[in-house]
Length: 274
Image (tube, rainbow, N blue to C red; front, side, top):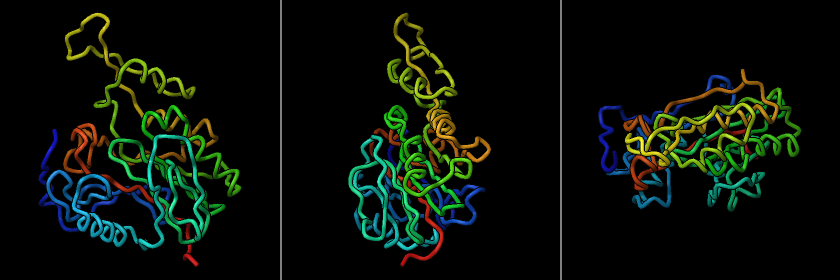
């Protein structure tokens, strides 16, 4: 399904999904509800390079910041997300990161975020060091092990302790909808010990010998990589559902054939920015 989606009748307030274990720090996963964009980008599109009206996107950012209880001037997001393994540390003097797929900080008041529309957004927080990270991971990011590298960056740069780190794994395309070729499936399911095996399904349901696609669970792979990095499974929370299935709640790059909006996943270090 693609094109114009009716998101009226949901109220004027944006719907932001939150994790139970992050109550003491600003954080959230935005949905598509509550913004001003129209058409394929309705309504809370936070992607700046999607073809949407720039003024609408700017207004949506203001709406998201107000609802998320942070200042836009305190938000740092990657200039470009490239499906790699780079983790950039954000400070008060480096609020405009370049190419990367994960940001981390321990400076009070700074909010780090990534944009997604099917890929897995991951928020990390160590309350003992007040360090946080926001991570973007599609299948290439899983293969590059960026969830693992983000945890390592928090340990190396902020002295975070894996046993204390809490993770929120946000809405993403689910195994119900994410069909890939066998090569991609094998790469994804081979990155971590506890990742579930893929499900093999016939192409177009015809059962042609030698022609198969596979379904993979990206969020399960992310959870496995976080556990490999030392996180306790009880500190990892899955937030939200499948971005492809839930049309009225989420944008989906695959479902909407590339013409769609973006969500913002954000988390901030506690305190006020100096």
